[in-house]
Image (cartoon, rainbow over all chains, first blue to last red; front, side, top):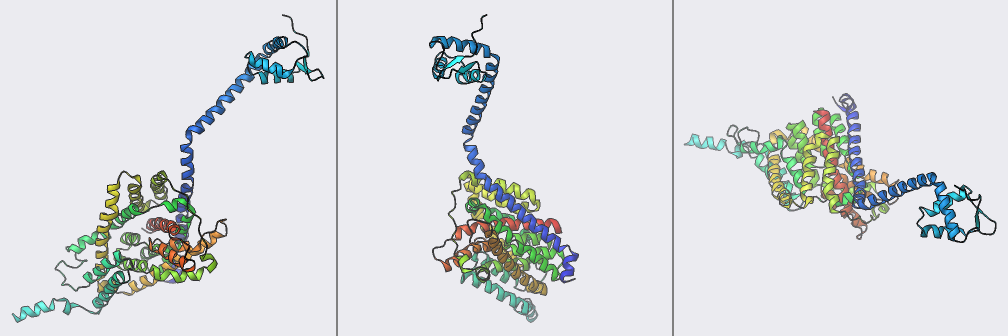
Length: 141
Length: 375
């Protein structure tokens, strides 16, 4: 048998098409793997840095979570502490940066976020003259 | 005494030789001439050429001298060819002497090595159309891979009776790469394309070179397990080279092993071309198809490089496509020569090594595929 007949009878077209496709697939796979190899090795070399970064993010995340829990739970306590601090800095009206400075100095937990929350809760409000005052009078126990 | 003398004379080669032996002896001498005088693949053409002389000295049948007689020394040595032992050992040596850096630095060039394998499958179709049986057509098709050991390996598995003509055709055309390829390269590329300069390679680290043979082996052999004997040895040899701790083994593989095997392989393949067995219309057909295979492989590599340029921001010199045929390193050298003929400051050799080496991998995968489809 000769010619196109022979090719068709022995599945020549299919074998050839499949064969060249497999060769291409193999070398494309290999080419892709090689292309990525040095990138993977770079990541591997910098793995400590990545781990540190990742663990840093994780720590901050946990810390923020804890802060949130703490502040949400201890908002009353935070307000009490802040009120005490306003007395230290000279009572109402008070300067917000001065309050934050004092809060940091006295070791109040997360002073920025605590005071931010007090502002958002409108426990602390602006007096219209660039200073702040407590919106309600101090609770008596 | 007169009777003894007549008997002796009638057993000499001078009396037993016919025109076929003489033709093959001429072919053997041409091979030796090309190897020595023209420096065309001398490491292959000289042993094969001398083997052709050895195989075409007419011998008295039954004395255990001819390569096809089961008790002859040549026959024992030839077992390494027919049983497919020598080609993987040559691949071991090739692996131990090959630096894959250029391929690792620009892996996209590997696709040119894949494109050139179209030659294998085009020749397979051509051989079927010529009337060869599928197993013979597959063995002939692999000539398009331009890789002698792969051609011998597949012929030994699929059509052992054709090893001689296939091996001779493959090695002849490999030796003639500097003659066959340049006209096709000039025909299919413009001067502007031939002048394209390639970007510098990035530096490839030692670790990449060590990891590559392992990844390459696993990826390729999982895809085409039939290529295991060839690719397994190729990547193993390369791991020996790159690991840095097996230098003695790598040294043996790339020198002693490959040299010994090349000598025995060349000599026995040459000796298998006995005129009465070799000079058949089939052999002529194989030679015609072999030429077609090399032409198609070169053209498909070039055309694919041009096709890739349609999508690439940094264009590649399409001449590199011609190096996709795996005649290492001859086709890469041809790319360098043709490129420099246009611009003496254009150095393409190292860039051409990437498709050249991937062509070796591609042709071994191609052989594995044909073996698994046709066996």
